[in-house]
Amino acid sequence: MTFIIVSGRSGSGKTTALQALEDIGYYCVDNLPAGLLPELAQQLHNSGSHLQKIAVGIDARNVPSQLEQFPSIIEKLKQNNVHYEIVYLDCDDNTLLQRFSSTRRKHPLTSNETSLAEAIGEEKYILSAIAVLSDLKIDTSHITIHELRHIIKSRIGEPHGTTIALQFQSFGFKHGVPSDADFVFDVRCLPNPYWEPELRAFTGKDPEIAKFLEKHGSVKAMEIDIATFLHNWLNHFHANNRTYMTIAIGCTGGHHRSVYISEKLGENFLSEYPNVQVRHRELT
Image (cartoon, rainbow, N blue to C red; front, side, top):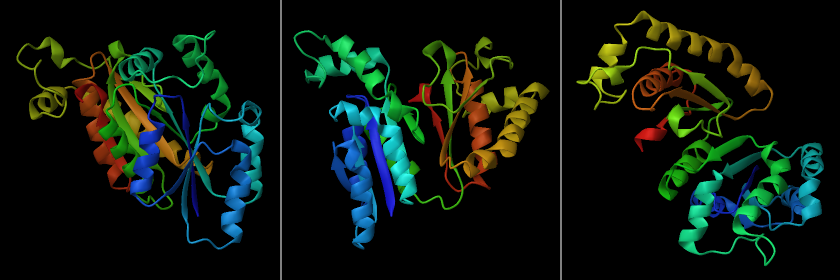
């Protein structure tokens, strides 16, 4: 049985994630009281149910005391030998404010005494016990609904057997560091094609940028060093029950160096890890 727990702040895309899982055969239950998770898993297991893929949404509408006790609830799942994974979606505060303002939806924690901004901040605190235990964090600040559905289906829906699922994500530091990254590597020290006027319009996926970067030994050395580090340590993380890893590669604007290095790392690891994705945040 595959048991997925989906959580995150309101407006971050939980409903979209659950719908994507439902599309690929998961039986989805939204807003189940957290304390019932062990009982639900055990009942399905003992009954020999045909339902083998379950996804449960847990959010701030839950019983507050049960959210505080979430770590002990997870321990009960472990004691019952339930294989589970926790997916946590989040978004930066300004984007959440814009989403609620544009849709005119009511935040579940707002009231006459609590503003939308205050509710968004309070929700982050309420769900912190879940966020810290998550196996996969997805920052939806810069992605569309369609992109989120694709990420959910490819990273969770596609079986990856006994290996860890990897995502290499390029980004620009001037737009902020991805909050869902497990590792962040800074490649701003490498030669920058941006300062070559004839190369500025290209991206790290274009042969013109590759030709420029491959003339510099430091670029290959950086690629090798990052790959070596990951090859040495990914199996240790997987042995510690990590199923997903997001490796973020950043340069200044997120169009040239970080894109090139992410592409090369994706090619490197695809031969060993069957579930590898490369995403370029600033190119979407």
